[in-house]
Image (cartoon, rainbow, N blue to C red; front, side):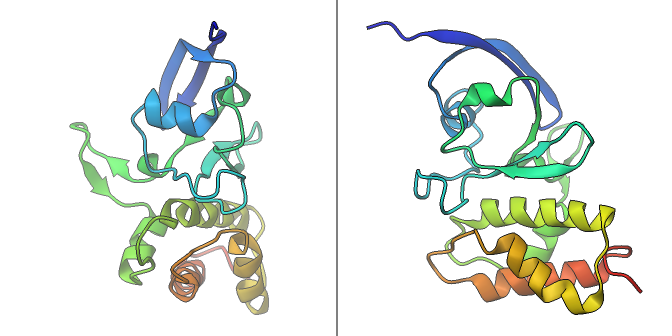
Length: 181
């Protein structure tokens, strides 16, 4: 049996990747883990339900969206800009972390994780939510429901939802321009 491959090129965490030969049927999560050694996206359910595997994809208009990597083939990402949880923090010239993203920092400050398995998906979801709110600020009375709507699809088996929610709510309320005055 022959494995059929195809060239894949994309921008991953601000770095041009490819073109490299990737099996046509390979899921993006496997590509990230096996080809790029980026293991932050997690295999939770393998059916696209839990969202532990999500990454950020930049759309043509510059806005961000979540994409599940356990059910989406690597070749769907051809030519796209992708950011994994590893690419959220700011790195120095030596590759060392010099600053966490605002979402990562909020999660640390609120101890918003238990086992941490689902945390990359929640970081992705919160990052996409903040991008959306920068473009379309909301009223103060809509904050809680907006966060719930954005993160509700993410599953935490340790039931750490309250801490995730509090971290994101705190960040949304403290970040200028996300909530209408």
